[in-house]
Image: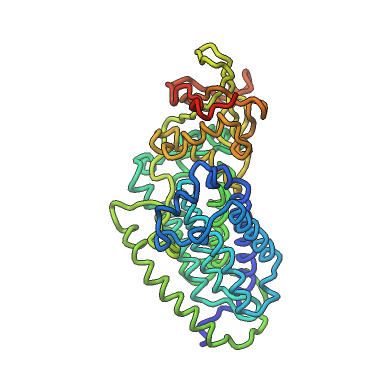
Length: 473
């Protein structure tokens, strides 16, 4: 079948595969370095407790069969190793079938992690990585020309990412329709980056232009992905530019990076015209069957996009094969932050020596400038942003976090930038207070050196200590 292959997209496929392998590597590294405190046997939301109440068919995972911290670590580090091998091009040295199986390994391993990851993995970019990674299995290697159907299905993912995000904005917060959301967004986004302060202080007319360009990129340009070249390349290039702009403006894990990766298969990159051998019949049959399955499963995301009650970032099947996406359907006008503190005093008082825990990414000390972490994902820091929005977001895990801090748990403390207490002397009490944060003005920054100004709002959690039965001496 001559129509089945697109030889001219060989370089686009190569760049896509290597870039996707790099995203996989970051995702597995994030899991390997953070899981013990979040999901481990003594984690805040332990996997054994989760799999005991959730059936395999609802959350397929290797860890439904058996769990231990050692097994999870082995899977996460194995995912890192396979991702690094794919990044180095090992799939190109293998027969077609073996290369497909190699690409299936990180997908299966990451699916096992996401499906037991609970709140810590309830982000749209987890499903986006899995959906993209599943299609990558069928993209082939140097033995075959890139299949047209897979290339178009990758564009279909990018279309849903962009168009879904555009629709949720127009249906959600009125500030998107008034072009005023960026007056607040750079200040109130989950985890600002080192340039976010400067983005916030751009002239308001430029903010209006940014929002208008965003609407065009998300609501009009995605349709051009399915047009002939060079229009499709121009559309994908514009999406890449807007995603790079978002990379500069904040820390959004690998969301922007995987959107860039998805745009690559739409680019008509010059790659010469080498000839490929005839495509194996079994490969054509597999690709056609997978394409038919994914088209059928696309009904749910399409109906969601057409619905007035559109939802963001939802999977419609436990394998995360076809999902719906969206971001920032509403924008907060005020930034609140939960500040966690501890004291060594046996009887806590207002004038006790309360020492603040410093997180790696979320705002804390007003004088500490935000850092760039993305595409690495600081999961606890992100969830602390949700906790500040409402205590109900944090109800399943915040109490466990406080308990681990009272124990000076090493795995939990490794998630933080700094603990104010020595390892052998944990705090007697921990409390949490809610503060309002705002960016300082240019004049305030010059005078104080602080990029944030914070104001106490209320108590979030009163002073808490371990129960007497487990209190350390």
